[in-house]
Image 1 (cartoon, rainbow, N blue to C red):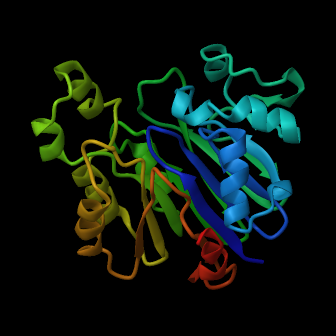
Image 2 (cartoon, rainbow, N blue to C red; image 1 turned 90 degrees about the vertical axis):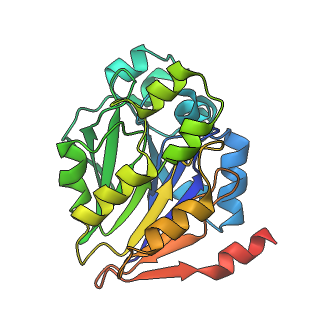
Length: 271
């Protein structure tokens, strides 16, 4: 059994990440419209019927804007904390709401999802790791700083979606107002390229095969900057930069070896 993962979109205009095996999958966040989510899954050759649940990290619009329609249309359970639910009212049907708490193991078929708390300017923000067989995938975005929880779980992962939000010089020299710059760089904002690189270099292990840099700022970062910065330090880890405009290709993780394989044929359907 192989593990499939892909970024459907990553950025302040919408976040949605797909992790699954051949028969069951989950979405981490649902920041795209239902129609756009369906479109991108189809482009990648992924069956939406395999999705068995949606997990919500926090209440910001770019993480929940599509959840009500998507969950209702496909009757998907939505795992969300009570505090997050109470502070956003996303319109999820009551019978589809499944509250979760940090460190609780949630079983979705052969997938095991564990949430943990992080530092971000939301009411009850969480990140997630997903286990399937011997492999572990992390989704670590919207992080103000690399707290001990982030470091602890990062060290377990064979593949990680890791926020690399902004280039410090671009932000400093840009036209954002001071209060927004302080919000981004504060301990409950976002990880800079430098902070993300430090987390990666200090905590990667031999089993970390894939790093997907995520949630890049449209105005204060670029894929070129991030790719060049991390490639220099990649070692045996494959580096990929997720887009805010399109889905990534699918990555496969071999259940036994942890080897990462790129799926190119599905991606050809985009052209």
